[in-house]
Image 1 (cartoon, rainbow, N blue to C red):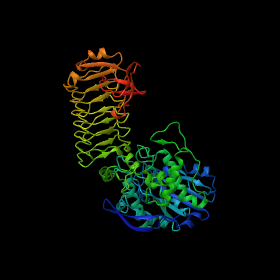
Image 2 (image 1 turned 135 degrees about the vertical axis):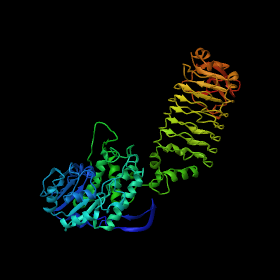
Image 3 (image 1 turned 120 degrees about the vertical axis):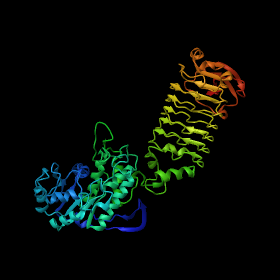
Image 4 (image 1 turned 30 degrees about the vertical axis):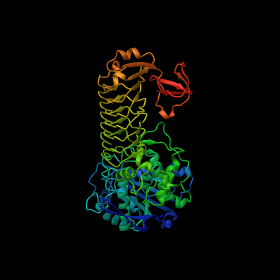
Length: 594
């Protein structure tokens, strides 16, 4: 299968001052791959091991006949083109490193020693190249240099591609040549200068493109595109499907590499695709370094490979191939969409997908002070967020509604300070801490549906939220800072904890205490009457409030019998709740907070 010749569109994508020409993959070299007695040699490094280690098992599972071909690999650790050139010419300076020669698969046998060899002894690798006629020789650049084609031909160990190609042509004049489009580092890997798997993959793809134009390259193995496709799916993980930021994770990632190697090299010969194969890899537990291959994720990996084979210069979420648009986020507020696109549109398609949102780990102060941001309920798609940073939405004074992602555990200091139009916020159930002044002067906020895992409420966290007339405190809260609820119109506080925690006298506004009601679990009122801060409430009463939540005034049935939670009839055929003391009541079989 030849990928070196392409029909090219004229669309140019400018990124980092580099022009990308977008090709579509071709299939013009079938004759090479189906010729009798095909002999293939892969000169590579540890990435070669990643994509070939599961290939023999995949071939066995598919039960195909490849007896009239062979695939050998020679591995020089961490090798660049210059390293291979120096080794073959007997001028390799790193003598402590060993290289390896091994057979991968196939029924034919090459005239070679196999095993590990010291680099000062280059006779085995030269014998491999001079005593056999190879039909296809595959090379690829080291991962650290792979994105930067401009240095591949420099006269140093990072370069020497031209010298290596000339030498290989001299040793194997009949051979065709191929290369890898390798995968990119994880976002957080220390050597990822681009800090983005996708942007680095783009540079690698561009380098491979230029190599195919400058040299006689008849074969491209686009497994890196298959991995990048898979990273756009729900199967991506916190290490971007690597085991160390650089090398492929064991299990699923290596399986994807093997499937791509098979589909590119062997499927044209066997007329059997790897699609639908039932080769699975299991392990006793899942981790970031090992991802089992299962009946659920294998088809997604296979589809990622097929998409890479169709076009190795384009990334597509394999879960979206039936309808790409159905995973795009539909924003209620164009301003929110614009800000997301300007910072996190990884593929530059002008749309923001659920997968792109799910890969954002820190929103920083992107939204701080945005005067036109009205709603951002789509923040819930940012499932990697663990924290809303300090001042993240400070000064967004027309923001009215927002949904926090499910994995957020902390809201930082002043995160929503002066969001004075905010009326609706959805807190995640795993929220543990609300920072100091987090909702300072959110004067339109009426209700707080605080989650049951919440532990800390910082100083002035709800200072001057004067539309709030009542709050329900979870029983999990262990700390409330001073002035946390300095709210002049607050009249009812429901505390689900049977054991009062220490608070200062200024936790609530001084106007709250004389006429305010504190409702606590049955059997705990005496403790609250003796506890600092709490004892200042004019009325402390008890109720069954463990499962209590807010009920909107409009939801209270206008007519019906009203009972206490213990079943005592308070009013018969009531038309309103006017005059009832604050507490929890049963109206028409519903629990209602008054």
